[in-house]
Amino acid sequence: MGLSYEDLEVGKTYEIGSHTFTRDEIVQFAEQFDPQPFHVDEAAGEASMFRGLVASGWHTCSVMMGMLVRNFLRDSTSMGSPGVDEIRWLKPTRVGDTLTMRNTVVSKRVSESKPDRGIVETRWDGINQHGETIVTIRSKALFGLRHPGGKP
Image (cartoon, rainbow, N blue to C red; front, top):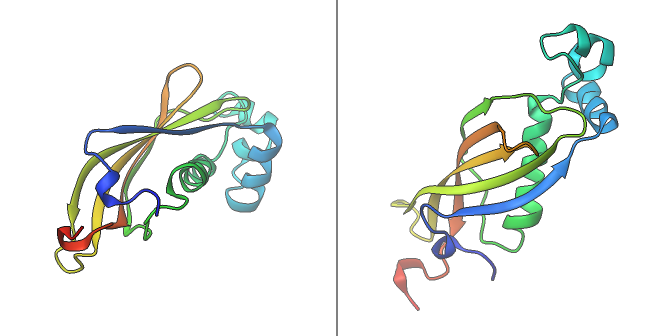
């Protein structure tokens, strides 16, 4: 068994991984899921408040979710999430940006109704190659306990 509820420490920050956004993937994602002009066309992006082609915020979040699953949750006791509490897109993700994801444990508690699992609140930070935080996400996740009820 990999990572479980007991392994997650409040206040600890985990570096999850990095991803570089290409023009083609930005346009491909946007054409399918968020076809606003500044996500699919360079000229429209240049004419927009962004002054260039930018990734959909949903694309940025999807990339972060993929990194989280592949690099952190794989082989863990993760049971999914009851939801995202907040997403803040602080700066646009641009062609060529490399996003590094960090995940900080904000709080955790064992579920009262289902004591075999815990609820872990985390803050995700997406930081570009310039050290700028471009997106933050607050969410909760469910993790199985290695030893429910404190049993060895």
